[in-house]
Length: 75
Image 1: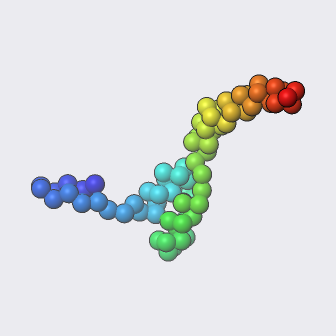
Image 2: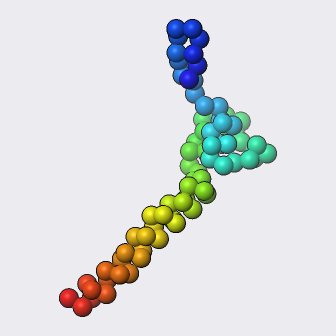
């Protein structure tokens, strides 16, 4: 957001900003065209986010299913 007096407007992220948000280092060479670079960042996953999901959601679902599945097999 850009605030200039009473005017508030937004701007697009730069390709480098998008890459940083996705965890790419500044040394990572991005495609020259903005759209290509932006798509590259958008097609990625952020490793810390995936790790958090795996620890706090996926592993919990697996453990719950392990506890429930033996009951389902007996029925």
